[in-house]
Length: 297
Image (cartoon, rainbow, N blue to C red):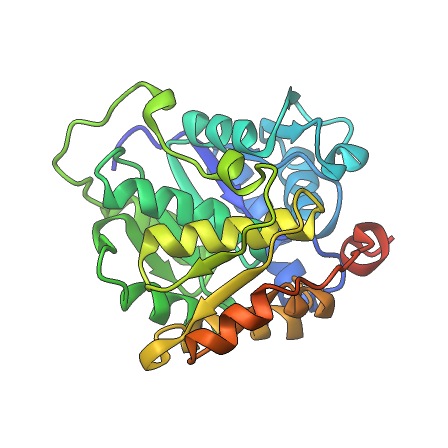
């Protein structure tokens, strides 16, 4: 692809993950600067996000952080970067990050990172844009996630690039061919589900079919529940074991500490519909201390 100047990078804010992931963020920040590219990211000073942005900026790259004022993320704004853009909600952050990007790179992360990448893959399945989504699969972190999305009926593989190291990112992007579509410039036409998920209802969210659209909806709901934006139950009807790979990735993300162990209580997954509905009618109230449990203050 030509005109690759601005990279949006999705990645985790956890301060508890292994050094291999922190080293990757540090190396990629330096590489972005070395290549003369600009960075757009989620604006925080914690975890991989802070490491990437600090390193890129210290090495001379322009760095723009985008922070939603109505999330706790706004308590952890990274100071001293080139520019910080304040927006209202999570969906505003994601749209701004997408709008500014020539390409998107996804490093290891949790629900928020997966939500951001899935949104673009979902929009791609609807042929709404021409921007690649790179997954940097360090130490096999994204293996189960990638296996799962490849199994969904509505997935469009034309948008997905998978690499195993940061050194492969720029060569892969240079060789990528955009799908032959005419994208819409009107971001208002790009669907998101935050408002629907957070509406004032106790109705459980039941995901009964493994599609990119449903997975984006579910992971977005899990991320918002983690942030305390709603208290709705979330359930996966695992007929024919269709969500096994997704569940495996979520548990792996918890093991790698990109999400907290408490997050495993935010959803139910059952093969039997009656059992799932019974569990979903009794939501578990869970409070997650983002500062200590996730960010690592």
